[in-house]
Image 1: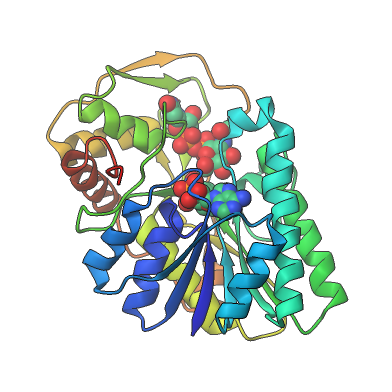
Image 2 (image 1 turned 90 degrees about the vertical axis):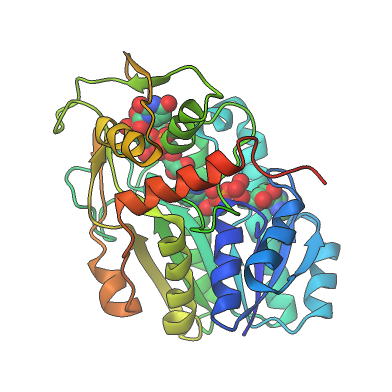
Length: 338
Ligand code: NAD
Ligand code: UD1
């Protein structure tokens, strides 16, 4: 199966490409390298022995997309490309709507023109807003509190309308919980530019000595120890979820929606503890006030994906922290510049 992977040089996309190649699929990567480096390609090749086709360009460039579709016989598209920093989206909403919403519409137009009818979209648990209860099921109400979340929700709504209008299409919305971890080789991982927004990359940069301490955003939530609880999922489990979605739903017309999470919640302090054990170093932290927009707890009910995609997360918190540490300690500055 030949799959166009937009954003395939990024964190989740690159790990998904490795798993696809190992499963005998052929990824064709399209990325504008806005948030990734070209050296990712050589890491994919080191791990798999295959250097995937790579097109450097933007999903908003229709002429470029038409060329990519014309040059490759593509069976399906996995659409990771987009901007993802919540705080930045508040400062730059136009860029977020242009990249995430407009970009997806251009991509789907090009798919239709090329006769490609199968799409998997990277959505997020952020579309559940502040859920009334946990675990979260796919039929819970959706809402958004910032432009990033709203862009994901808008794309979900656009794709729902598009699938309704073109019922022969297969569109799968995958709602990720909190992706963390790295390839077990230590050769690939998350490489955020600038100050990390998310917990795991921040913890690992403290552990490796790039930052002095972690700020824990609030310890007065109604949770197990007062700190925020999330459903952390290993990026390779997440990648495998895409393969399962392609295999089981990618050729079935309809709109398919799945949570990709483990079903377990861990607090910030539990994550610090697990990471300190994996790395063998203390992770310094200070409790500060809550981060605006944060919720107390969030974890998935992953039963639907298990039943319909025959997929479930298998990697543990110890795998997530040990693999993150292997990547961070052997690549303290992330991927090299070429
Ligand atoms: P990432 O930034 O590492 O990867 C995204 C890739 O898309 C980057 O390589 C970037 O250069 C590329 N890109 C961005 N805009 C583009 C454009 N207009 N044209 C072509 N390429 C473009 O992010 P990630 O963590 O791998 O996330 C992948 C997807 O999953 C995103 O859509 C994100 O919103 C979604 N998601 C991520 C998380 C998370 O915690 N990482 C959680 C939920 C959902
Ligand atoms: C955040 C985004 C969400 C996005 C997801 C993946 C917000 C409000 N939400 O989710 O929209 O889909 O990332 O990109 O930004 N924490 C600290 N100190 C830190 C960083 C985080 O204590 O330096 C805490 C947070 O308060 C939270 C937990 O760690 O309780 C996880 O935070 P994070 O990794 O940013 O993920 P989310 O907030 O779940």
